[in-house]
Amino acid sequence: MLKARYSKRGIVLMCTVAYFASYFSRKTFSVLMVEMIKNGAIERDIAGIVGTALFIFYGAGQLVSGYLGDKFSPKYLMFAGLVISAICNLAIPLVPNQYLMIPIWAINGFAQALLWPPIVRILSDNLSHEKYVTANLIVTCGAHVSTILLYVYAPICISFMSWQSVFYTSTIFCVVVGILFLASMSIILNSSDIRKASKEPLQSTQINAKQDSLLKTFSSSGVILIFVCIIAMGFMRDGIESWLPTLYSEAFGRDSKESILVSVALPIFAMISLFVVRIIHKGKVFNNEARGAGIIFAISAVLCIPLAILINVENTACRIICLFLAVITCACMHSCNFLLISCVPGRFAKSGRASTIGGFCNACTYIGAAGSMYGIALISKHLGWSATIIFWIAILVIGLIFSILSFKKYTAFLKD
Image (cartoon, rainbow, N blue to C red; front, top):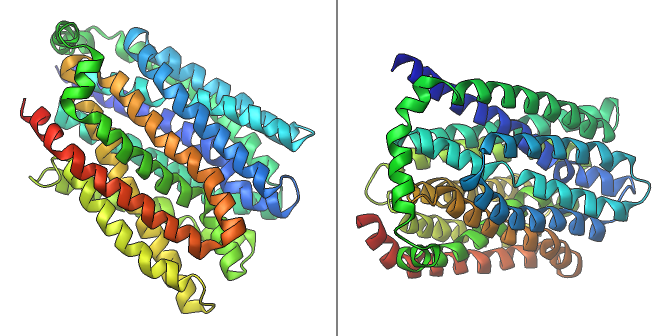
């Protein structure tokens, strides 16, 4: 069993590395967007459409990936996702027309969708629920470390080379990681010890999967109502992450390099929030993900009220306060994401639906994210940033309402 234990650590490590690479190749456009708009490489409206295309195809791809992840070898799906994403990152700086960026980044969105549901299946098949939640935290933190690296690396490239060089770096990185991941996982998952250690839970999963239809699972667990909470969370999380550099630059008159660099606070505070929510998730209140999400939505809505007021005040103190409030709100959404995207699908491993539910959950995330990319571009352009933040508050209230509505059914599901 010693060898199996180290094999499980290897699984978590390689899933973390793969997700690290996927986030680097997913976030390149949103991080560089403010510089690309400034240099005339793309117009703001088109940039919003490019980001929306990624989220739409990522969300739709989650449904496909979730289904395939329960039917086929997840390691090959993840390898394909990384390689296709690398090709898309290579293509963006080379296209002669900004409109061609839309289908290219849409394909990248679908490629990115081939990562998370297979990761959910790999982890839930080989780990207990408690270790699965911890592994999810580690994998998710890998994505945030990747984002931190990108926020620091991009301004350096802009200063000494060009924004195009960031896309080229992402291409090379994804190809190398993809090959390393496929080779390593082929060795680890074919290990006799790891197969023996995971044989019993896999058999149990296969038996239970025959007992309940997907429709019955949806209706009895209250997860459909949770999907609406996830849409609201996705709108807020990815909306703030994608548009904060532009908000900071336009609202306070700062240059693009500074706007990108200060955004490094987003993944740093996101990781802190994840460790906090992981600790309190063990308690009675947040162990119920619907209740925990509702509390987080309420706190976030309160944080956005002073942000909407102070965003129009031009002085250093207000700029720092607004940045802090936006970052904390985004961190809260990452906590909510951990509860609803990482923890909720793991509850369905007993019925053989972990990857499928994970796919639906992530699809809902990027329905919200897709709406945020173009929606925030539209509202901020015509009504300004203060009106945009008031709209954020409305989205957070919707998330709170549906968290409350889902609580009863989801609580009964957890008891069963």
